[in-house]
Length: 573
Image (tube, rainbow, N blue to C red):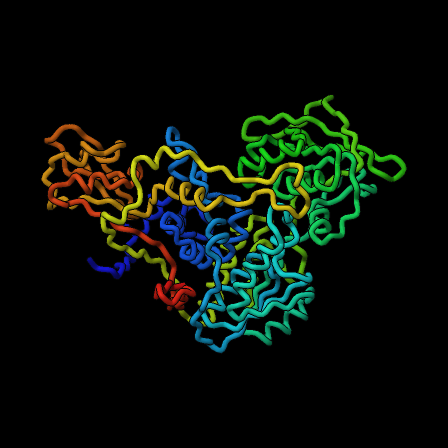
């Protein structure tokens, strides 16, 4: 059997991955999710970590705070199939059990890049460019790098040490980070553009979104991000008794849970829409809110802060109706007041303005020559994984401009021996593993609530994955239509097919039939297949094969080796 994968540039193979590996397609940075989960099945956490480290750069961080766009797409979560695989938690397991130093083989190319802002977008671009041989310097205005990862997310969800470890793996590549260094004018930017071959501005969204709420300037009223940054920098002096948080995003929930930890006797989140519009890491975070006795009031909007003697004593809210198309309107006469000494307005963040740079002008990167904008600074406030994806996109734009080289999408296709298939039908019935947590009584500002899956839990959860990167195919020239594969299939995944077509985009379509006179082929529906291998074992003429599909984007790959010389494993970046 050929051990070297076949490299395909065919749109049909790219389309196969897009359709049949929905979790990877849903990931903004296209993480090889079944690849690292399969490594965990084999208890190879180092390989699982390495896959994540090369794909999404921050395994420890994203294993805790990713908003998980992959999990709703997981086939295991479809109706009748149970709950989705805990993809995010398994990413954390890879970092918890498999983190190790990388040993990059980097050839310097003599070019320099300056990145302004050490948040997830800027650091991802810095990481990728360093691997391609660039000398990268990152300028950060705060005392530590990480941006929102370090200052906008509470340590009980994302410990500072985890952020530092993930960032260290980037500085180990030779990336230099200069903290307490602020760039806030076009003149300063011009100097950097003259000094470096390229400059990436990725300052993030570190300013709160302002709005004209009467009473917002009263004592006891905080902007959400200011509140969180003070908490994360140990500068928060407020001692609330009763807190109301306005907003339904990540920061709003973080502020409410922080309020609980600093001694508030009662905390309420007031959000203008339904829970379907809120942003949270997973259903377990709603469970944590309930455990911490945080009240959630939906479909209400703030009218004004109630002020006495210059200090907030409550907030007036009005109920909302949500009509067709999500249109929201206040309910006349429904106003009510919640008494509170602390009001937190957590309704979003915005980017700082850089004099002379119009963030919304899409022509800026081209118009300014070697200047590029990245992440939230360009796109507005988003998620960590979204910022990483944009940092990678801009890093590639920089490389293409400075080198003339282009990135291309490929699919590596490897033959898989039947003996290596790790799934069986019983794995379909495994319940979803639950994340262990610390007791409510132990929940302080710095005590991480979720303690991580145990080793046995991670392996069990990994076995639930359908490993959708396996492609089962029938060789029609060898098939004798004996139906033995259909006899042993535990789910309805093998069909008699007619009217088979392949579109220009590679989308395979056919109609099912029971009429033998119409049959053109026996087809395996990989969207229904559970990768148990029963059909391979039953086929008397060995006409069924299985291949592993691995999508990646490449340009002159850099080799990175694992720090275990006995494995001899090499992975291309």
